[in-house]
Length: 215
Image (cartoon, rainbow, N blue to C red; front, side, top):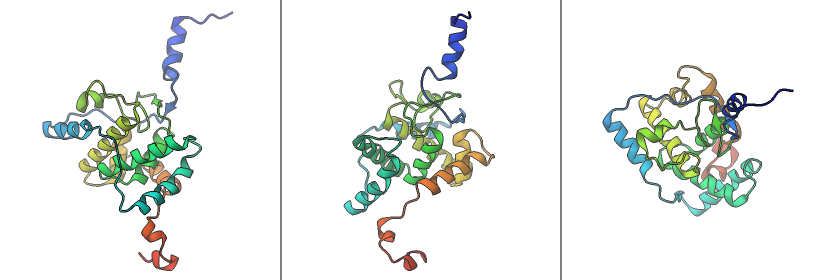
């Protein structure tokens, strides 16, 4: 009979993330930041006010939520939790100058919408943020398993990489995943974005099909 000892238990626990769901193995790479960049990023994650996304109108808000909530029903069954999640995604994406649909696609690839996901590289949460970012631009009380904190970091980091790459999303996504120059990850995110999270704004949705297609 084979007994399980501390020597066998520890590798098992580490391999399954201490009971947490494993996620995509990619990870951001720690790099030296200029003082001005570090200060700007630190400021970006400092404000943790309650998110309230800004839409063009109440109709636009309801249209977006009505379009998105059914798509997440299997991943987040509770309706109130699902709406809160979507509003936070929209707010944080908007705050960072990102398309919320892109962020949803990235989350799908990174964690499968598992709030407590941990990758084999140690990245945490919905957007799979590496813990070194807390040390670099945050404070010790920032919990990467907290919904708003994780999305704030993830969106800020992706915005940072987009700025580095002068708006090149393909390369920015490669940096986010630690696979710069390789096509697999950017293609996965783009695929999830276009297949699962494509969205037509209310104004275009109300136009006749022939008119909307020419714009």
